Length: 332
Image (cartoon, rainbow, N blue to C red; front, side):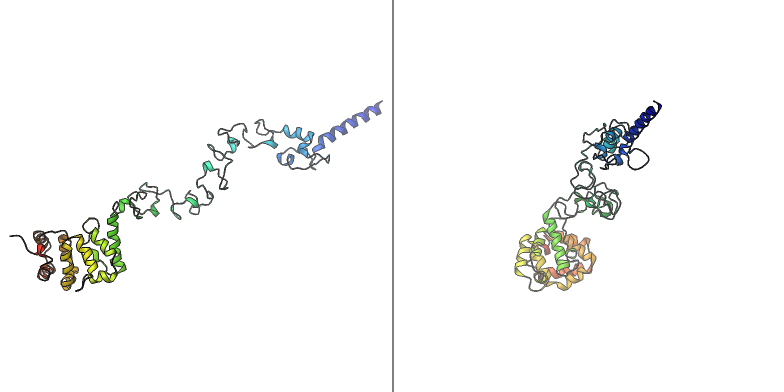
């Protein structure tokens, strides 16, 4: 009887041991981790993958390290409560990358969900200048985008208008209004364009300033359009004895006084050249640009008296008495 009981006890123990080691992973303990329980292996050779094996499934189901009610082998966010998902995106709060958005949508596949993407369409992880702005959306590469003294959203190192709003450019000329001499008018920009053309394109440095052109006023808008449409040869002829007739006609049509200017340019080259070298005389030219009578010219000459001024005026009124009659003869 004792022999039978002993045999029965040994048989029961053997059955219990075999059951206990049914999920044996080859080590000295029953597999009890997510990695082992989900490794797709049939450790006990019973043709049932471990986690499909009733014995292992029971074992794994009892393992819940973070005590959130979800077994470790099914835990979406180990260490946190899988039941807490404030934004209802199926990603528990503890592992939520985008706390207020949908974590499962990432169209640019950069690992950052669209709702929290710093640079949609580019990789948020690429930031060569380490300024916190991904390269794909960096406004000022190689510099810190966060340094913006004038708060216009353009970083200082790439700011065109340091003390103004770079984002406001009414005339779309590339220069912000706050630093634009001609923020609103196309005509003003044409004037500057004409001066650039004459000085840089045709090779007459400082020609506009020397001739009294002021692109911030309307006085020279019409003439500048004429110059911009002319060839450099035609522009050069305006200070010769034979000014280009088409350009002369265009300029003269802008202002009756231009006939006087054209005549002076062609008849008093020596006096003009001397005037260009004299700052007082160039101030006289700028002053008299808007004069419509001799009294105004007299005032400009008095306020800007110099030998060059006197000589230029004398030459003009001697050689261009017809075209400059209203500017040379003071009223009685």
